[in-house]
Length: 359
Image (cartoon, rainbow, N blue to C red; front, side):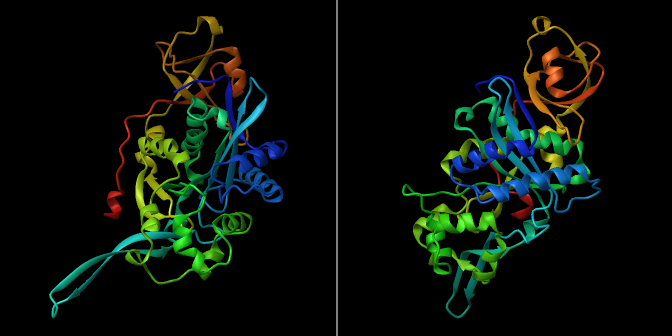
């Protein structure tokens, strides 16, 4: 993993609007939950600030939006969000993969048929969503920091989030940029193409789709071969992100996106590597030149509205103090003796599995 300069994840502010709009317009593919629509993005930032300002005892319709800042360049180079409850405002619809058995004793026949059923059971989960990263930083520690700093935030404020977390990944698109799944299913019920309906759902809400889409199970043998092959398949640009989330401890669920059939992964919080391997350490500040070499780690302060998370070396004193340079301490807004939350940046090998609770 290539490292980059001084990076900081923090809550989005109104001055970040233009940068977030640029990131939304440059995402590959365009994200439903991050529309390049200035008014909607401005509302998203304001909603995030309100969520951070409120006392919260249990998850509701809060939204937390973060940005990744490259301090060396003075640029916002990424953004990502958490929806405290995916279906707090409108039901969060997915398709659930199921198996139906059709049997006839008279004909001595028994067939298992794969189906997709409209579901809103993922509405209660907390959703990691709306992540877009400047293409210059893909494959670097910046990508990992942006994705997983949200888990550092959740670790500190568990009462604000559900016990189950989910991530929906963009689905497979063909060489022409079309969605084989949408063309085989949704196009029969809407006049708009995939990209048009994707933008419309981002600016408004996905709930109108579930109101028009068929309420009965979709039998997979009736779909095109291309559509069947796309079910649960991620967009190639998001393969590294999916692999990292699987290494984190997420597992594939039977749920897929109702637009493009992209995969939805989920996990109980206690399964996640970041949440089970993080720990508190008091800060000890020393000159940068005297800091020993050590494995990189994510380091976060313990301030809600002024949350900060960066990458530093996991160098501890014999008494368990985390050694930081003055610059790193200033980046986090912490003084010597103040405790910070630390978690290893490295993850174990990937385990690609289906949620055992859904077998």
